[in-house]
Image 1: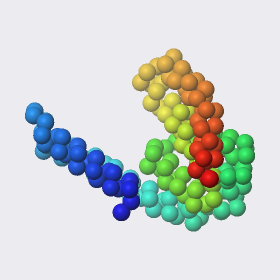
Image 2 (image 1 turned 135 degrees about the horizontal axis):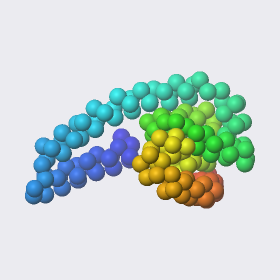
Image 3 (image 1 turned 30 degrees about the vertical axis):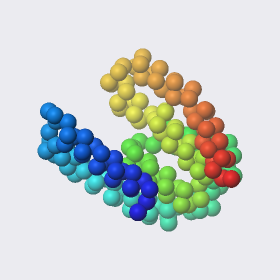
Length: 166
C-alpha cells in the first residue's frame, strides 16, 4: 500500500469522524454527497488510468525524449509550456497524460512545466470559464498574472529536478 493511499484513507477517516461528531451536520448527507461525487468522477478516472498506460506504450520514446526529455533544454520547456496552455481538458486527462509522457522518457521538470502552464495559463479555461464568469477585465488580469508567474514555475520545476536528481 502506497504512502499516498494511506494518507488519503486517514484523511477520509478523520473527515468522517469529524462529520459524525459535529452537531448539526448530517453524516448521511455527507455520505450521499460522497457517493454522488464518486459516481461522477470514477467513470472518468478509471478510463484515464488506461489512457495513460496505453499512451505510455504508444508514444515513441525517442520523439518524446527529444522534444520534452531531460536534455531537451529551453525548447523542451517551451514545448511543455505551450502544450499545457492549449490542452483543452481537465485534470482527469492532463495528469495521466503527464504520467504517460514520463513513462515515454519525458523529463520531470518538463512535465512539471506542462502542469504549471496548464494550471496558470490554460487558454480553454480562460475562454470558456473565466471570461463569461468574471468578465474580460478580470480574466485578462488573471491570465497576465499566469504568464508572469510561469517563468518562476519553470525555474522551480528545474530546481526541484536538480534537488531530487541527487
